[in-house]
Length: 75
Image 1 (cartoon, one colour):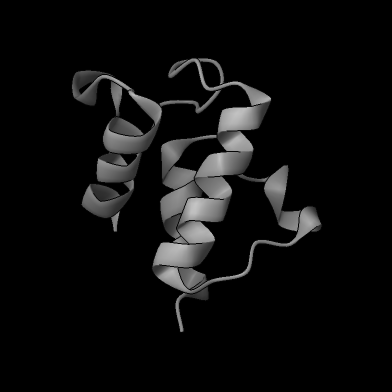
Image 2 (cartoon, one colour; image 1 turned 120 degrees about the vertical axis):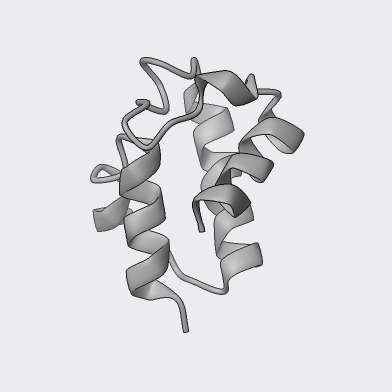
């Protein structure tokens, strides 16, 4: 799941691969703005067949948070 998410970050949001780690904060460390974050979450919903509710969005601070959410929500 981490590698798939990393691929999305690199290919779709132009994040440098060496900056991506499980502890990297999406906004603070990777420089993702709110529009890019929305795009990332929509891409994750499409590619991983999950639904990210409004209540869950604020919990997704780090790459690891997104990976954990995707793994626990995957159908």
